[in-house]
Image (cartoon, helix red, strand yellow):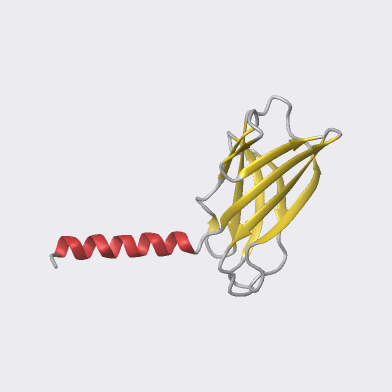
Length: 131
């Protein structure tokens, strides 16, 4: 095998492993009830204990402004994937795009985030319900 092939395999191995330890957002369900919103976010992460676990998720607008945040206070080593909710927050009426981002204690904010188009009731990994 040539040096070039070794380098390619080496770089692929490390890029896959680096991403594998980040939090994956499996699903987001946004629900609006009487003017107030609720988010149910399902995460998957290889929690190993108190030093490395998924410890938060948040909703941000297109400019990166935090709208709401759910802190996760303990590891979920034997509960994967897991869903946690946040209720009674408000979204601006003119909001077009919303992002859901997840965080872990070791790697910070994951590059895997969910983009929600507020004009569409469902999309890649999300559903919006208005009652």
